[in-house]
Length: 472
Image (cartoon, rainbow, N blue to C red):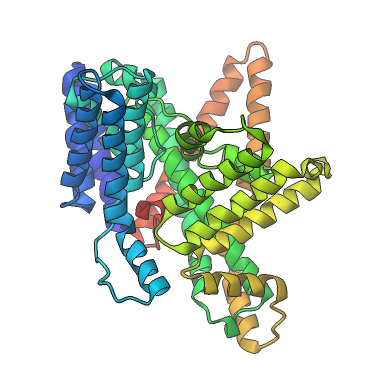
């Protein structure tokens, strides 16, 4: 993973970007990006690149056939194909294992490797077909354009989930300039720094905590592990989203934001408006609203929300820990729907309540089994062990580098970002701000360049570099 990251940073991306900038014809540019995207995916999944090609072609064919035959029938076929692919490649082993446990059977569990990013490109393809059926997107007769939409490498394997109607015009015609490319590069570097500098540091602490026997874990160690993973997953995924948005901008594509400082939320409902926005909006548009949304009374609204959260948890992985995590969030959303008095609590209490729910939920998300999850949560709230092993482990994790990165992680979730936003707004309102604006830009780009060098040094040093969302 470290070696491939360096290849991408130092060879693959610079070559593709320079070629793309030098080519004037949009068709040739698109052909270049398709070739690069297929090569990029094949570098990690040589076999499953054909699965992605088949998926793209079948969805392209379904959209075309909607103009010639029964649209509802074709939509049904498309849904069966896409969900069927997910069931076979992602959930077959999980379903068979569950059946064996429930009915005490011994059915052979299928050992199928999970294609990287299958949930992301499947949902993108399905959204295209549904939008065509609804008349919200025009049928694309050119398969190459559909393939580019589904396979575009910046957001292929870890999102954000992009709707075809949002970038259709840019596939046909787009332009890039030096200012836009520089801004996109800066956004990419910020995302890379989130991932390499903060997320990876938090990952080492979280992995150590979750690998411990409960006899070697006390309340302090459990909270360090839980908070570390909460920061790891945010900076990992938001960092990757920043990289995808930045790279897309450099090639002339403009993707919507995927995170809006979710750890500043005051309710679970608000958290999901800010967290993984592309997935939340996907389920809202294609599942929640078709189920009836909030139009059929509070009880039905609550049931619809819990259903969506169940599917959201299952989307993340073939394990009951993900399902319970989704239902856990659904339960809080259900309570907030029926107990509006919660929202009248002081803002400090609301923020504490929300973050407690989020952190406990992420413990379920991270754990390998439900038993581990509940045992870990028990240590968080009742782990008063005073054994030498538990205290030694807790203190060993509190290294100076970890503490600095943890402070940066907490600050980056809201306070520092808020000050940056306020500074930007002040500058925009002032008159004659060209000199000030230029100075700010120089400082920002210099900081970005230094961050890039720091990230390359960390990667070249062989530092731990896991990508959480690659497995989804």
